[in-house]
Length: 424
Image (cartoon, rainbow, N blue to C red; front, side):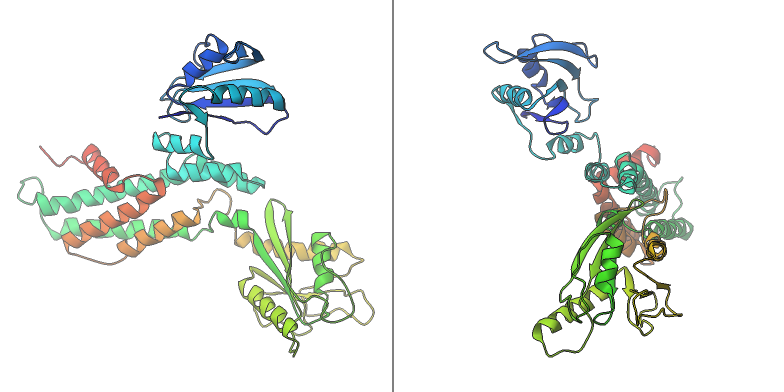
């Protein structure tokens, strides 16, 4: 296997540039540049030279012998000065060595997964952590990267393995004196199966992790000239939409992303809902209706009570002449009263919080949730035949094993034979 290297810190220029080298030739490659290596996990300053002996930089050098490393391989790190020319020269010198090449995107993490240092759920958490933009995204991603999802799934797999052992005992060892073949044992399996379905379903009741990244879709809808464009400008504190007294100014959707209190909101201004012979306007109305159907939070700006029961009824431009406040509206927003905009934001946030993972509640990514749904679908079928029970448990184990990226059948057998002694 090739040895790989890459700049692991931020893009140059920076105060320090950390170059990571991983693989079977990592120590040899760094020795050729640094002369001698420091003791493992101890930093030492070394001159870095190219193959011609020219000095490239003086850097801190660290070594981490495998397999107890991030990738499961030998790893060396070069903490260089963070100038562009320095980083480029050191990377070029590494790239000219035999069996050493630049890493491709995600290759260090892939090697960690391949070498058993992390599982697939932890790798997904790490990917989310690297792309986290808000504090809540960071907290959820860090929990997954630290193994909270993996621990729960491994617990489920252990329970499936124990249930499988009971079923196998009925199928294969019913002639043994210490294994009784009776309906009571199968009843235990069926009860355990039902309990597992409830536990997995409880996790699925929590919103998916993607909610934190994709945000809450807030759609502003209503008839023409009802103040939608004015309101989206107030909510986003930007001049996004053209504001005009002429009805139909907005003919297509306008979107803005706003982050407040760690939550991402996608605001969508839509065309006015009206009957029209204008084909362009009809397209705008059709797109507005599609946005309304997908809205997580709908802000209704019409004069009449909204038909969608979970809407927030907003009277926009309530301070303008001829635009009197509506007593039944949830909030009357005035441009010259910032407190009314904040009142609306509090209403939006209250609904948004209900859609988000809460506190330390376990949240799965959508792919992991789909694996859970497949497991539930198999286990939820009531069955008394031991052969079919065994197949249900096997299929559920395979489905949940996908979350960790492991051979679920092998995991089941390892748990079965390691913790549930059947043989003599």
